[in-house]
Image 1 (cartoon, rainbow, N blue to C red):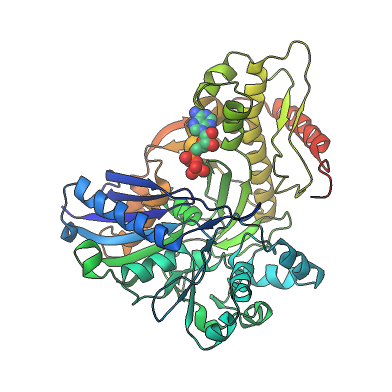
Image 2: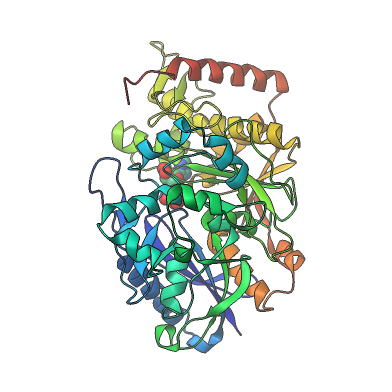
Length: 498
Ligand code: ADP
């Protein structure tokens, strides 16, 4: 028997999972990653720690599955996206800590881009909106932060990479400087229509092209890991950013298929096939994981900032529940939220409202309101926000989805999933294997090396564990969405000057 090793380098942990040909996990190892907060709004990781934790997980996963390194036929990499690392090509030393996607230090720079009228150019080339989230302004910040660094960059001595690129570099002992289209499309430097780095944007940000990795399809034989790393030279054969890997792992291969990941936040992606559809609602157009350079697939992407985080707040902030899963029982102890709405705009609101000054709002309280109503309103807020997103996507793409595939920690909550199906008016399907991110990267690597034959054979492995059919009448849904939007209006424009 042979296996595929998936490296899943996330924001809070590194994980390695070994999959067999049925897509079943044979072993899993996870290691927490230290978060560094140098100043309010700044978030960093130590690149060496990212690497060490990831390689340690990989080695332990092989041992735990009682395999020898030669039993692994391919490595797939999936990663936290946008996080930016710059290192010296000559010695492989990072010149700065990794600047994490959540980091807001370049907010002023992005405001300036907007004032300079660059929003349209950026959106039309990259599918993104100017925001500190993406890599471009983070690279420019690093180059400006250390005297003389730009000169080294211009001499071709520095390399930039997102976390996938850094891991491929380290795995290959410095032989590979590569990335895939899905990661490239999150840098704000990549022309998603032409599939190449954009010279105009590189000039705007003052980034020499020599710093950038070679961009390949997501399923591609990038190279091999150096023998000393894992004990064998193993093909590195798949790379994709975490959300695109999850879309692939959910077998959403055809246009019109969508997945939503219910974690701390929610990430929803809709496959739009070979059309890069610009959003009129502030969503992002992004490259989906691709299996060939001639057939780029695109996706519309939207995120909810606070989803599972609301349940954490019930537990840690309000102390309403002892554990997160306990929310389901409490919420189910009442028939409905009693017309109580919780708008969890703790950090402002994203699509389609885009209001950084909105703040959390609990409305509709009466003397009869109990903790159970609040728990139910909190849970429902996750579904309301996801419904807002999906409705935007459907409007932008001009299509109606037939099913939403779900994963992530909060997707285990049956009450939430049923309410989600009710609001959307489409079935919500939860697969047996919810490790869709790691599985997506494994599938990409296994397709490249012939371990799996084609996408159809992968799609056959996707099996429903639970399917939630909509049961609410349209009139009731419309009434609830109307009340939700009224509650959202009350939450807006509250914070002062932030
Ligand atoms: P992340 O990858 O963002 O850390 P996970 O996919 O591990 O997220 O999911 C964790 C999130 O899911 C937490 O925010 C937690 O509050 C939420 N969560 C976990 N179990 C439940 C549950 N049964 N009901 C509602 N939310 C849950």
